[in-house]
Image (cartoon, rainbow, N blue to C red):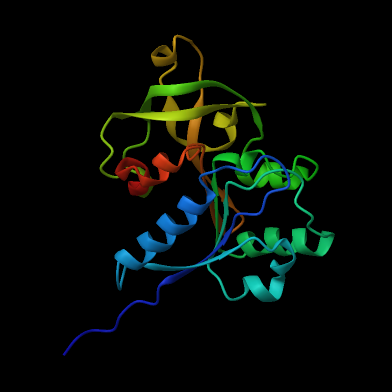
Length: 215
């Protein structure tokens, strides 16, 4: 007799933009939805993708386990009530994910910057470069090895988040002819909830890359 199946994690994926809009949004929505389905019972997740900022509320979020800002940008028009609902959702024990320009979002809401860990400053390098896997024990880095190469638009942030987060990936600065510390993916707690951010995702090809999908 088959055992009980786990209820899939419910993900609300927001791809709204009030600034730069990435060509990779359509691919991101398709890939994330497909990944959730392909994992099947016990490890899968269901995805509801939306561009409607107004749909984010405490009542809506009650139906989800994870809020995912994927390639968002600019000053999204959240009300004070919506902002409080987002912070409360994560702090209550739920999850928040951010990809790429999720750090180029909501500069005028400092609590969001604290939630996600950093704000975008610039992207000095768009090329193939090497990414160092700092924490190989985290679920997001399983199977990546010590490092991998990828063509990306690599971000630098207004402040280095290292002192506030658990860094998972960093840019190998020497691979772009530079020096310094450039975290690219990290995790952090927020209340009883968890936050994960990954700065990769600029190109449609990134979302189709098995190394990125593994994360």
